[in-house]
Length: 175
Image (cartoon, rainbow, N blue to C red; front, side):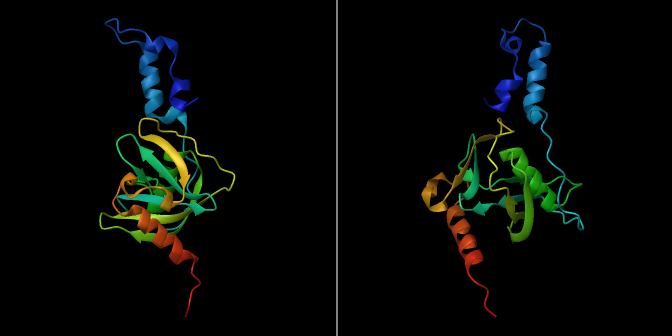
């Protein structure tokens, strides 16, 4: 059962009667706060590197971890970084909020023109996605980038970018 369904009581779905139904208010607040789920502590103990937004590229045997919103295509998990957190902490928090998975942000992969910081992130091999933000995220899945058509990506050429980054990471370093 999705998180949001477990938070809604039957009385919250009663017809509007002209006054504020306390159960309905509670259900809406629970949805907006992801049913009380808080992200785990950040693994980044270094100096704060600020960024407007950050996200994770999780790659492993299952493929790339992707999220799909209600009005957009597939994308890497990520979002806004709070003023009080580092870009790495923001990436870890966002992946938890969007996928329910605890991640550790590693090396910086790329900084985009809009300031988005993308990190290589690791999750447990046995971790399973669980949507914590049902109003924001419709689906979470592991995908081989070539399995998602070009028009299914939220951002143009994102599949090709992921393939290029993964390929470059797999190549042995030459000096």
